Length: 67
Image 1 (cartoon, rainbow, N blue to C red):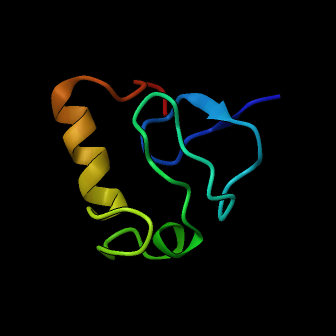
Image 2: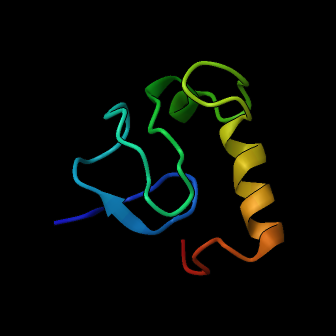
């Protein structure tokens, strides 16, 4: 069973987020429990915040529409 990436919305993770530190094969987001709890925090495993990364992927048309 695959689990949904918190960033792009595609089912690419082998473990259920948050905090698995798995890396999405679509958007390369590292599942970081800190950024899951605070989506505006920039730092840790990922340089942009989760919210900013989601906006960027949406702008580029790479976010799964039903995510």
